[in-house]
Length: 121
Image 1 (cartoon, rainbow, N blue to C red):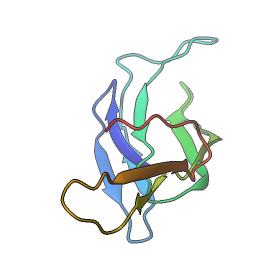
Image 2: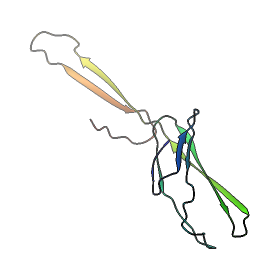
Image 3: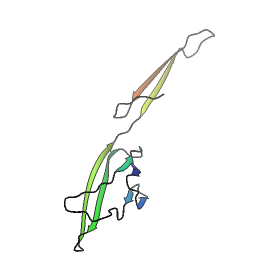
Image 4: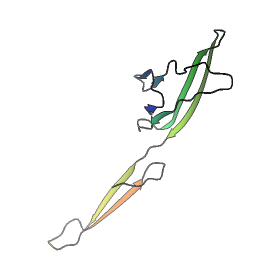
């Protein structure tokens, strides 16, 4: 899974050697967040096929109270990335012939992934 875009441009977008991506936003609020108020960032990530299975997105937020105390919170969500692949096999009958011989090419398409797939071409 890789970062694609966000409703607020990140301050930092860093990919570690192990493939983990860190996207950081600093000081996104123009004013303090009032009690029971919320703010949102929409992040778009792409399942890029580099890994399959359960992929985890971890969010952490840090801030200061009006009294100057540090506050933090975090949440995690997972998305399942499936392998999406189509296998193509072709058989020909007959595999040899003279001019005028009709040749039948049978093309078998098999979805070897875990989602319904429609071949584009």
